Image (spheres, rainbow, N blue to C red):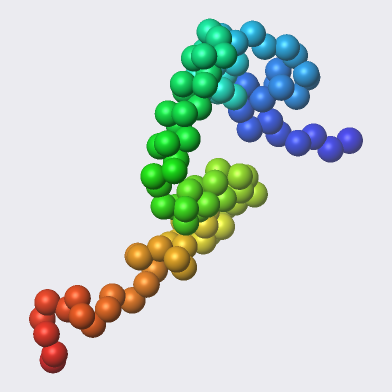
Length: 104
């Protein structure tokens, strides 16, 4: 029999299919907010949607990829994931027009 290690103790109740109340789910981390009713939920969703809408799409995709990739547990694999995304300005060569030193 092969055992797969559980990465965090909070995964155990989820693996066992235990029911969680809102307070426990918030404490464990699957949720980041608990709201009392549908109106409060609509307000939180509108606020968070607006916050995400204003972020660069490429940055959101890169963060989502890093959060999903749990296979990168070795240092070299993690470093590969942490490299700038090709669409990021940090990965692009600086245009000559931005050179403060002028022509050499």
